[in-house]
Image (cartoon, rainbow, N blue to C red; front, side, top):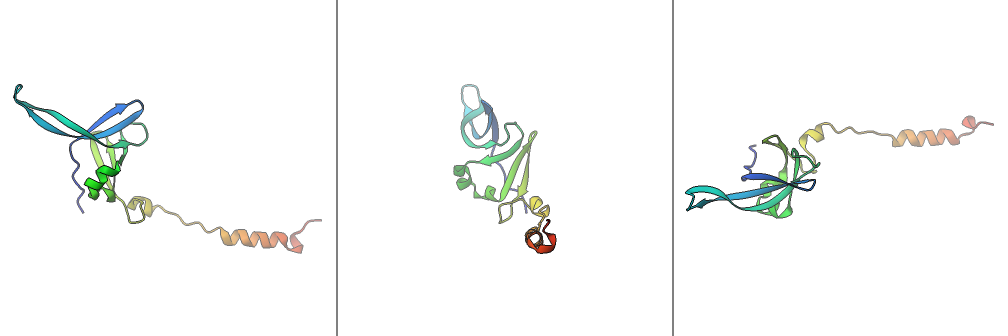
Length: 121
């Protein structure tokens, strides 16, 4: 499966938060060159660093629903896409899930603790 194509992205810092913007270039007739036109906030980078996972705004996800199935992370100037499963976790996280069964052990410990041979005098 191929990753969706990100629109042109810009990262701006405001305070301690890094915001993700998309923008469109417009032609400047006087200077006879392209310049950055309007920009629109589409999300934030989690963790307070310039690199990290991007949390897209709901408005952006409604316009580009193909990004709902991906976790996008900025690493340097690159963007890493990780597919998210139907349960809302990445496939890598799903591979590393461990199941622990402690309920039966706890119940048996309680039964033994309440039995006469284990009571101390």
